[in-house]
Image (tube, rainbow, N blue to C red; front, side, top):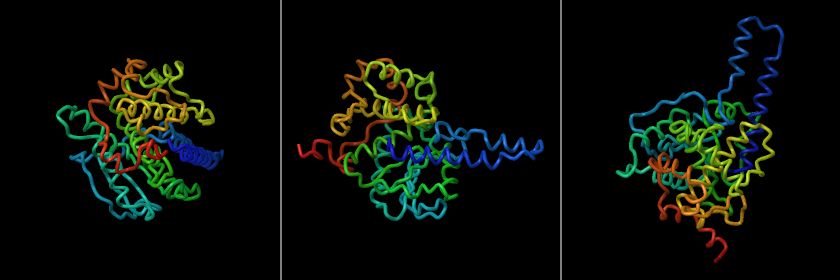
Length: 313
């Protein structure tokens, strides 16, 4: 996950909650006021980002793949691109071609292929629409669009599932910048709602059990998320990170594109993954592997270099 974004989003979420509580702290509420206060304080998002209630419309064709279009509906964003239920939103400093490349990566991950389960795939994409999956696309680490005093950003957070960003022009790891953060949305929303027993952001899901096993065995280090004081947000971030590591390792993308110098994740390829986490791998084959595949190597090469190429090896 883009850690700076996660911390910034958490701070804004907590600040927003504090503001609502202060506004509702008066003692002169009648019965109607108490009811309104309870409604205002009811949780709307899981783990700080996933809408709990379906609010979006699902089109007849869930495979819609649009182009970059101007928008005035989501200031400070000025343009958007909708693909398979995931909406990319950016300002003018982002290249249209970069947004198209990210969209192509998403589309290639959900091919209409005879080897996949078309009905389950459509349900995953439909959930992206239902829960308003919105992906901001900033230039590098410029998160100035997240202004806590800006009611427009508060409205975007309130009305959408905003779980991460996909940055353009990162100094290293541009390929995984795209793949990782697409997967955060797919696992947090599409897979979470389609396969809750396996991919649900819940303590009793197969993903949670596999994460606990991986942490116990030393395959997955979660210490870097310990400073997330909100337990629900911390758990969701740990789960989405683990899901990213798992799926990209099953796709054999970690060896060429992963941050091999990090100790957060130590399993390097599909064969090792199958051996060390067999139960989760079997669950993966029955769920995620039936609806999605790795993007093409041609597209990944267009996004950016391998880690070896970055190091000049």
